[in-house]
Image (cartoon, rainbow, N blue to C red; front, top):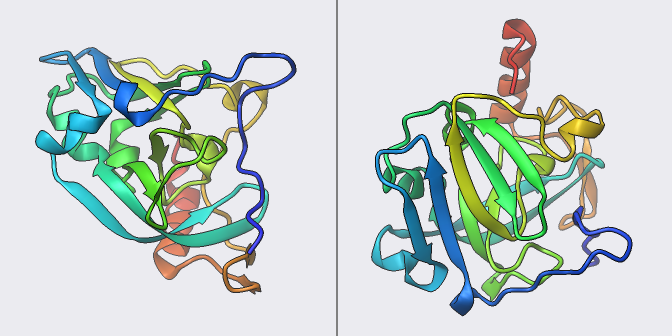
Length: 202
């Protein structure tokens, strides 16, 4: 199975920053009760690890179901007790996205470290990636370095060039693991309808 290249934020001659899991720290700063800085390889000592099959949706019209493993974002955020409304997530290479905590937790977002039993490769977001399963993945941040809790929405890297709606659209996506066109799961279609009615802003 050939997996399309997931969007990667490095362009031109910009240096690619590669950090192994053993050398990586995850930080939570900003509007929190307690700032957090934890080595990625020790995160399992603080919060439960999770594993499960979930479908990933790309804004380019394809999807892929894999077994992902890592940690729930909700558990990680709870270590800091956020006092603000938004998560500003930043990658090692400077890719940024801001999403409301409510939206991220509604979608059971994960901090993914493994894909089909293997550590994430560089192209897939090594060593840890924010995965927002109920939205298109430009809302996920590869090579996640830090989370800042804020009360202010700021346009992220893709939002700055015109991407404003991360809702998974209700048309068939090419399920590359099944080699067929497939509509999103019913709960995602329901979420799309709800967002259309309420005019939800991410």
